[in-house]
Image (tube, rainbow, N blue to C red; front, side, top):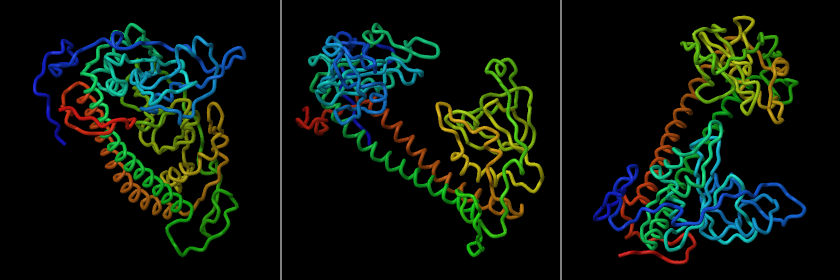
Length: 441
């Protein structure tokens, strides 16, 4: 949909903002709101009063916050309660984060919150009604060319933080208050529609992933012949398998090893063409590239430690592995790597030791029992799965691309509306709190 622009514009005087509608003001946040950095932590002290705490994750995962959120319990002094109890149309932002991208993420309080306080790592921004309308300010923090102020001025190396000076000195467009309400209501309605579409598409991706897993599970544990005679495998997770299949522990089929410690410094000092695989799963687990290699040929690798423990990859060519990657080399040519890539990815999660740092160590991997059959049948199963999963993955990619397009449009629409690049004053929508319908002109 093409939105019209305002009749006339002026130079905002701010390079990253450009032109704004002629009747808009540009105001530093400290002149249009009261700003407080919370020091209320999640601890409970007997001498203090019981409260509920709105914390970092509540803000990170919600645009609007009300009493339906599952807040943690904590305690606070009377002074902290007076300073940080949340009120309707307060705006909270993240002031500390491990990533610059997660600095100044915003949420708006939808109603007076009683004994709910703004927690640590958050800044409480209470708009002055004559200058800013909370739901408009919420959206303004989401605008890419406004949020860039906080990205640029956050300090830190491994953890980034905003100072009160940076937050208070940030410049925001300030339309007339009634116009801010129109913009906020317009964006509530439009983003709700977009979010509904995104949710439906995300559910489609989930269903395709479920179908993919079910397809793999059936093929690698039952095979492709619907009329084959079955027998009890003797392995609880596996159940019945084709009568002519055997079972073997992983160590019988593969020689197991580990990678080595490879630092970011080593990679930076010895750049080359050979990938270094680590515990991450994004980008096929590539940590960097070296000028030498430790492994050559076909291998299976798996993540031994961390959140992705148990994730299996099929590697080929010349490469390196870090010490949090296990390696598996087939002991004979009658093993089809991709068959065991498929089946191990289905079953290894059940063998991961779940604690502070999940692990799937070599001795556990070695003990896992897997089916073994004629390599010709292994290859038939692989050919079928490569073909069918490729089709599913192609559908998932298309849907994911449309999700990303919708997310980009959502972000662009918010930015355009709160910076005056589109004129929505003739739009008629209910406010978030349903107290009035808005129409200017």
